[in-house]
Image (cartoon, rainbow, N blue to C red):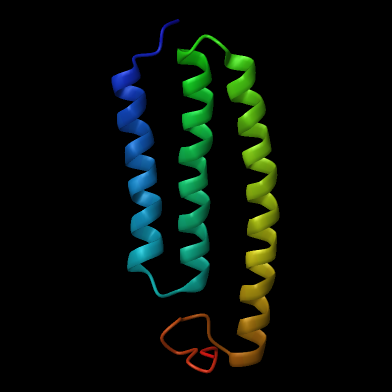
Length: 102
């Protein structure tokens, strides 16, 4: 099975665009974190497809596993920070949490 690099690039760009849109347009911290997760899914897909297109799928898959592990750790830390902010301030909206400015 061959992968058309044009369609792969379009898919990666679309997924990354959705992730960036979620990060930029939302004020809810949870939705911003989900946008970051979607963005890292696009990076993971780029590694897998790039490895396949360059003839070394093992390298792309191993890099994708590393990205998935790092993404899980960052998401867990981000969720814990959001939960602590919600407990302390009672809101997860960035416009309502003004006391975080230093």
